[in-house]
Image 1 (cartoon, rainbow, N blue to C red):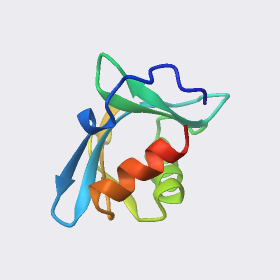
Image 2: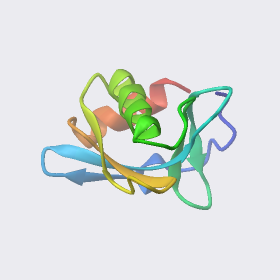
Image 3: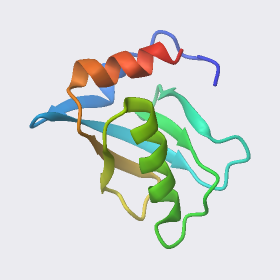
Image 4: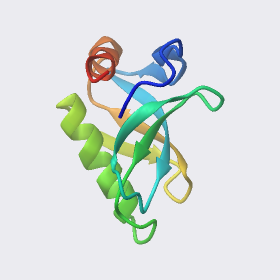
Length: 105
């Protein structure tokens, strides 16, 4: 997806958590164009669009698969399982997560 908010600081949606990183995301299920978007400048959350519907954990599974693929490290939804706004734990240090997000721009 094209970068629309280049001045939004990625660290607003990232924080260290043990040996990994927590990432605040907002999910758009049932999307016709899945992928990782920009950081929402008002909610300070990374936009993740998935094709899966928000039922039986399908959207959460696709979010985890998408982020695991991007970061090359396990990503697990740890909060917000039934909400659009979620917290995902990534088994990678914050500099690696930030670098992966910046590299896709």
